[in-house]
Length: 553
Image (cartoon, rainbow, N blue to C red):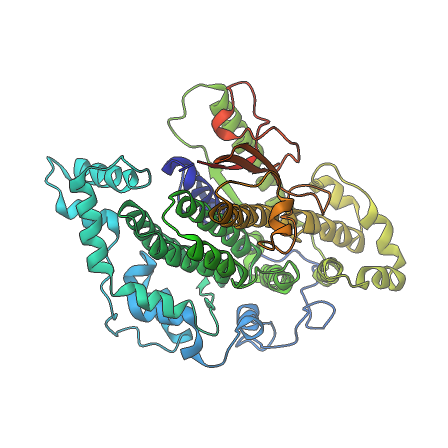
């Protein structure tokens, strides 16, 4: 069934908040280093350049002593040497700077340099956000009321029947103005490559740019899908759904694991819209078969292994910068308590979490400012953990060369190691222990990746199976008794698998409730069959129902 705007976009907003924490939202982050300029503790051993410690041997920064990890990342991850083959470059050419939000002059110039564009060039198309377009069409008593009403109208488009004819006319006139942009987006998403070069924020990759571009592209496509469904253009809406899928897949292929997490969120949003297109009943039998084939031809999702080296380079950049930046190299920060939360238990829990975070941050700063570490030991062990995620035996070989490292590394710590505990250790032992702390905090775990991957896979498999059921119905005038009929009828080549179930061959759950009605669902993250009950059915005292459901009609 159609999902409300609140629930439909919730995952996107939460995922973006994870990336942009500290820039937006309740929490305000400030530098945790308030004790004057950082001085490297006496006895510290900075990172040396070697394959075992720095992982890469070049390129070097201007000082000739440290690796330029951001440049190394670009060299490893750039899929083409020909800028004109990059779909992201084409998007920037078409929409220009406005598509990137409030990007600074410094970042805009750097991005254009990396994309071989002239930052002064006029964009091919003047992009206007839908909410801004509506706002300019309204007569209101104040700018605040005008803005609020514009957002209300833009959100109303998400649910059929919620918008007036006049409000739909606003959407239509905006789409007419945006129409020249859509072929350009489609062409960009079919370029041989799609790479978003990282720009620097304090020497780090800036993820804000990537999030903003993908968000605006999704809004653009989403709004035209909604309009096309409202006027009965099902096949056109499906074309835009495919563009959303492509944008999500390309975004998930960007170097960092966070890109994959957001890419899966975007992919699931595309699946939700695809399901709405199917539920609209606007597609005929031939179109349904083509839609099913289209899903098979989508670009593949990113793999866990493809993210490891980018994450590794990011971690090593922090270690290499520590002698100059100190705790700031690891972005240790205090969190200011959010205002106006009241005196509820939830507010108290938030305040307690903030206090606990700040206490841990204060202790970490004290450790980094006063206790020396051998950062080569730390880096070598961290590299070994990254290698292990790729199936290599580096850590095992490392402990054979350094048997004294194994015991402190294998020791379990249920709580963060304190300043007093570190102080009692030798520099070798404490460096080994710190490496283990970094493993807990920074090295990606396959289980986490698999859980995120299951979300996107389940959404796509539900959509694919839904299309197959419609193909069966178009031929037989009723839905099948079981999903096996889809394989027997050669509509699907194999049973649809539920990626949330531990048994790799366990299929999605299907019940035909009438010749023209069914329920199809995945068991969701809890792995339990809740009978097709999900967030719409959850009573206030029960949070266990999380089946991922599609229904017809």
